[in-house]
Length: 367
Ligand code: 13P
Ligand code: SF4
Image (cartoon, rainbow, N blue to C red; front, side, top):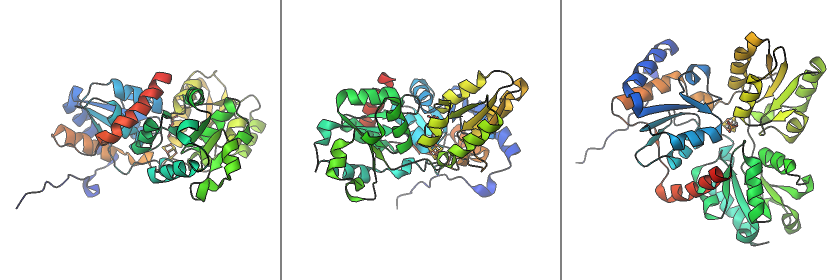
């Protein structure tokens, strides 16, 4: 009988308190030395973020993942980010996601089957490989990045979307943008594409719910996806803030609705938001439309300068999947790695990785 190795799994019954995990993270991190690097997205909870050696938005973290030499890239973020780290890192490196259930609900709104179906349906009206550049937001699975690689397309992030759409339009007359309709719409608007030239592709409907005429007329086909966190912010929240703080500044992430982006003073990625608020005038007031952990951290950091940083929604809206990376999972995975057990490795199959790399490399060259 052949022995089958049982995968080592996180045991919540033995997870320990936050305080215990803090000490375990520090000890395991020390044992790993140069062999590991911890990357952390800005939305990570405070108890995890403090252990990140490299932080950033999706674009910065992709670059950092490609540059590091460490054997283990421990990614405190979500699944697609660890996939990108695997695709862009060298063969001897391993991307580790402390909790495998840390996904992105927006990324899940597009899948390869639905995008391939859209491409086939579009082919009934025009030749997509001649007329449409597929552009995937980095918040998407690796197979969708591979689809873009294969079809002359590209990846974008919230911080380079305008440059990327310019690149895309330089090649073909139309863009199919997935999965986030809001980032696509806002970016198209920034580039001067009129609203009538943007059409929403409803992936639940045959032909995306569009007529052949609407498809021919559209310059940007926007996949009907969104972020459940950023959709909570509303124009009325901005109006209330402006009434109270007429000289205040409103800053939003481009995953917010068009209405919110248009009513904001500044729109940009998490790194852009962080840098803008760090540079705020003492005594200034800010309303921020992005995830709660980042806003709370900025509010605390800026208190000594008398800068007030307010979360845009009266409701608590955290990214529940980002929050899955907790000190318990981080402590467990670092200890396993230090003990020589490779746990929670994210591996993109090479056939897919090759094409995804093509689309990511195009993005890195353009941005
Ligand atoms: P950034 O690239 O701006 O960090 O955005 C990632 C994300 O998922 C925002 O919801
Ligand atoms: Fe995905 Fe939204 Fe969470 Fe960003 S905030 S990781 S888009 S679910």
